Image (cartoon, rainbow, N blue to C red; front, side, top):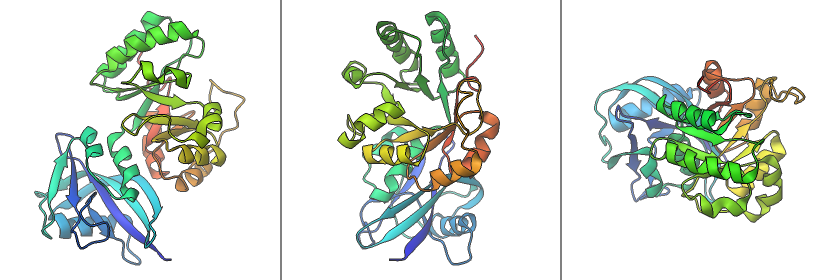
Length: 314
């Protein structure tokens, strides 16, 4: 079956809300909500196809967009490749030029709408930021919490509390305080035994590669309302992450790092190859920072993750 190539857009308003459209009942996956866009014609670039479709569907002119995520999905009756771009600037007032209902939705509320299966990774990508802060090792609790507070104040919206040198009760105590600092401002991801899940309902969970190997066959350990992530380093671990139904992953190391000098870097080409076969948001990690964000987008990644590159000096 031929794969249908589709360009789709995550259009963000100045207030941060995202534009979605309802499919006509007569269409494939009719009655469900979707991200606006349409088919890429032979010989047409994704960028050009998207600009054309949004002009026809919504009456807007796109002036700037960037890659967000690519998703391949096989329905029983149709195979699709969705190449999604984040529309960063446009002119005109969006309206349903083809009679389709539109809605501007806060990112956190997207999960309340019914989307086609192929759109679900796009919902995750639309809700996630382009930077993922991982806390550094070896800090005393006051410095760690002060750093998290400063990071949140500076606009960091996704934070992993990684403290491998802390013994369990101390980590749990810090986690309670970190949940409070992030509440309503940033998504906190914790690490640790899955037995702790019930004690931190507001937090997401970031699995180690070892946990992924141990638990992937059991599927998600909690419902989709909570964020689930995993650390991946190769195609096998990405396949396990997909099997488990994680929402996003880190893929590392892209380049040589001080933290893990013994690890062989993937390099940008291999990272891009691995991402192209994976249908969920990926943060590239290892020797990258804000300066590599655009390179990461062009490699198909959600953005970049890091410790030193994002940790505020306290």
